[in-house]
Image 1: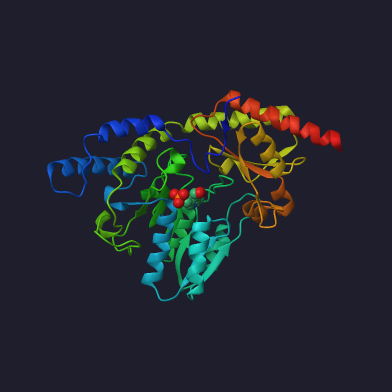
Image 2 (image 1 turned 180 degrees about the vertical axis):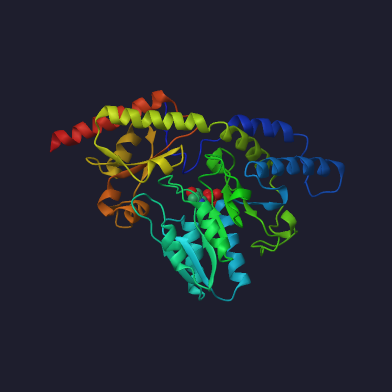
Length: 373
Ligand code: PLP
């Protein structure tokens, strides 16, 4: 059987057709886009057009897109900016952020900033009233992810931004998982910063960008002054061109993903496997399903599917090897629910036939486990 990859939220299968097209395009244009000779200028135009297209995907403008080595660096840039612009203050994040936010926030905490972590309930969504209550005259930044990487649950970023602007507070959103999976209009959202990763949509690893409305953001990496002096290092023209093309392809694929996700759910219901969806399905991305299986521990399911060439993600093992469930599902429910929850994340290559195979396998495992009881 061919591999069935359902771990796109960890990293997407690459759009290798696009990689090949871009290699062909760049074969004779190898110059540094910052070089002043005509070959460099040609590359600079390619880079400019890619940036324009990427900016358009978020209703942003070219100058607001600062290419980075990915989502982690973009998130670090925001916290580095805060650290270098304020001597103290309060930062509000959610308790389900990616480690690149949590660890940046904790670093600032060790330097005297106060960090407030907002809880989520079983819907996976923060409470807007609680957010507003936590704001003080010392609040300098609110950073809440657009959609969670384990559940796909979408946060009310527009409402958060409205509150942030009311109190004149900077607002950042890690939009790594949501980017191109749902339409995002940054002008309308009126946020200051957003972080994006290229490999989540089939482009290259170690590439992405920070959207920043302000030109005054403090650079994290200094050197030759590329990216308007905000992020130095020779431009990754290949990364930018591939990302630009992947953006178009991924945006055109949203309906396909919705369709496959609905099919997955219909088939799960039909199968009589005992399950519940984690979080508010109505407020989730079209490519992620986080599911609690009443009769199957997550690690057992992951291993069983792995043996059958099906790849999914779930809770992780701690250093003693004991399976601990996902921290996100624990934050939304409890440890027991987390121990039996896994993430399926689909992508452009996922077919209904694959879903049928996956569900048959889960059913087989559940039957085996119930038989043994
Ligand atoms: N933010 C979220 C929500 C993510 O899911 C990830 C990747 O797993 C990142 C940030 C980090 O992005 P990158 O891998 O580009 O550093």
